[in-house]
Image (cartoon, rainbow, N blue to C red; front, top):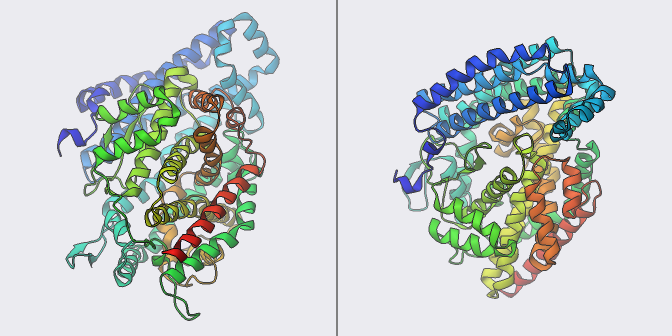
Length: 595
């Protein structure tokens, strides 16, 4: 690969040898962390000193861990780099075990003594929110030795997730299919994403069936890896005295369970809009008779013809910059750094990690992994991941290390606000009916894929955790049958039942992320409100948003979002999002009657 098309990891470590040397040094320091336990809370000054030492170590472990993951992800078949990644995971697990005494020690200290420490050592105020987060969980922290044992089990509890990643990204091979040029090619995730959008119905149906035939061969294996991961989530919740894994996961960032329940409930109240959109798609594809089968392979084809909206990577960067201009010159300065300093690895390759992400650590660049296809979706992915990256840059510039990251809950708001700004940018300037119809349909598809689909995933994830907790074996048939029923409830009676879509759960990596996916849906809905304020609101609205990007984890995410102007404990932001979806669905329907 030309260097310009890859990221430059030498800014983290000049070589793997330097990384190994840092690892070896950290191994020794991690072993010695336990020595701090004896006098960890001996005084306010001692507590401040010990916390500062531990966060310095944490910072360096994070850097080593980030490098290993980034290096391995560009070639998941490289056994040496897989070993590097495994070493980093072992180090991280050892570190977590070594510092597991912190919460029990602080809880044993008690609120009253801790308040006295703040008076004794004013610098301890720098850690107040961090300490408050620990004290808040008093009922869910085990004695120090028991916490250490749970931490030591981290590698074992993560084994199912690691197995899934290797199987899904490296060992699983897809069959050969015919592409749009009539050539026989081996299917990949990237080719599948293109073929499933083909206007040739037979071609996209063949790609759909070919992809899922591979997952069907390993249905029981994928059920086993997912079940293992669910059991690990439920075990962690159980030993920390939570009623279930959902409450445990959300409590990490003080998110009320009502936010999750409110999302699922509100989406169900608006499933009629999704059914209406599916019916419209069927009609536009000529599937007008009741007996005409409408498959999930028909959900991604363009309905309007494709205008000339393809992009080279260089052109996409210019378009992204123009779309994000309402955020102001300082935001664009950060964006320019990402675009011009080899922070992005964007060309797809065999065995490269699929999908896209923004990664790194406090002391590295905010690296982006993409799999560039040159279409509108690629542009949206670039602007999405750059939203994460600039969020990271602002946070690291404005927060100390202890608050220099942010929870996923707010992360997805920063990325999807960018997506909505791009949509606003297009719809504000495009007047050609065909192009406008294409963009509206793209938005409707994005909303479907982010709000509806991710909520469907969230509902499935909650169901399988409850099932395991109740003693139900998570077999392949059990998972597939429930997923098929849930898919039909979401997409409506036009969707075929019993098709390969029942296996979709087997290929979703986010089911291994411990109640992660719901935040895509809440984030997209909240981002709708924020993007409108940025595009059409006041200077103060924009400043509030930039201040949100700078806040990191310095306060709880619900409070952070309230400062930015969105109260996510109420359903208003969701209702606003569905209102915009309905308005754009109305316009799309009208335009399609005119074309």
